[in-house]
Image 1 (cartoon, rainbow, N blue to C red):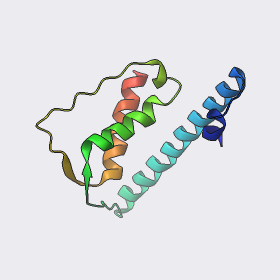
Image 2: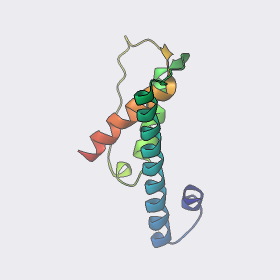
Image 3: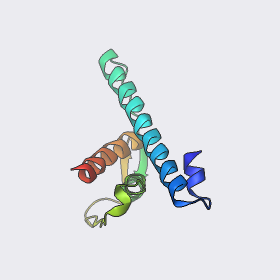
Image 4: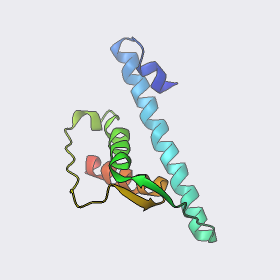
Length: 110
């Protein structure tokens, strides 16, 4: 709901509050997801799903997620993907996106 409300015409203060709610929701979602991953590791039920994916798309999705936040939107970011990186890779796309997102989150924070 916060994401939807940010896309409609509202006064600046309400939009700012919606952004805060949206950012908090995203952080909470990531924390719950991390906790579930940790629980899977501890119980030995961790599974990987292998599929073909385009690394450029995965990186762009992570960049969009991180830099759409209020902190990230104030920063400039440039991506230069080496031409030697294969266009299509094979692995767990969800886990790869999560790793890239964590790296970008840390880069924005620190």
